Length: 45
Length: 373
Image 1 (cartoon, rainbow over the protein chains, first blue to last red):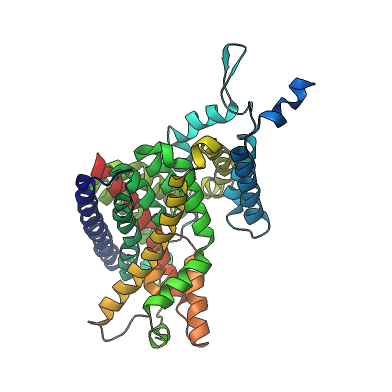
Image 2 (image 1 turned 90 degrees about the vertical axis):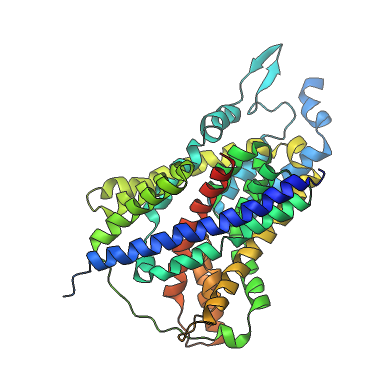
């Protein structure tokens, strides 16, 4: 198990890809859920 | 007589150690009730696979290869990724997105609390693991057993045993790990922040469309994650559609129970002494802890960052609830809030973040896989 600098660069790239990706996807889901809640509001009895 | 004693005379100390580890797993499952559905079968499995010449693994008998039942199950259920995916249907059927849809902003905490996954990838690479092995180790931080099995099965099948043991063990240890991690990065005053809760009803249509929307988004952004996301959301659709209650009940009970029995036993194929007892395993167990701690810290720091810009402050402990270990993490957060201020009730926010963590962990798994595809 020797440290490969190319793997370290890939790990850094993966970290950026992963964190940006996950925030992007969940922000998209946040927007979608807000839109859904606006379009289909709960019946208030 | 020699044949009868062959088992005892040919056993190695490493195999004895693995049997003791099996006993420890069963003790944790039975006595401490830590993830018993997985730890008990895995514990007995660890004993079964470590007898010299055990019949549960494939052996050469009189010059012929005799297939072991656990190897057959492993090839059928783990190599094909079938077992974790079937479990996902059941988990999906158990998830109630209601608390999350009442406060959709909690989705962001699910994202922040996946930080430990990617942080651990870097740490594992620094310690000499190759990038795919490091990614498999990082996914322990998803705090989600089936996702860990699914991802590591594809990226580093050789590490499946220690990764699964670490993932399930740390999930069971969330009540011990999270308070320590949270206290390290928050002040007492921050932990006492009160949040008023306004319950909003969510319509049935939103509940039905939401899992479909998640599937569509995942399909466009990380199509390789669709087995994970799609099966999870299929289970949730069974629950929410209102016309498949019988199937939803089967998914939550019979399906999950049967597959859990098989999954736990089958994973033990990777608990053979020659593959498990090495420095790598110890490192993986240590990195798993790093992943869990950094998940909690990532979530808390994100909440603190938001508080710099918000008038209505968020209790930063909510951020730590954005992991997938449901409902354990939200319970831990509420208990910590009550310890600091007996009148503080943050449970519903914590549950929302915790449910978000269930979505975020599979998305994170999918992103890891798509990075390498």
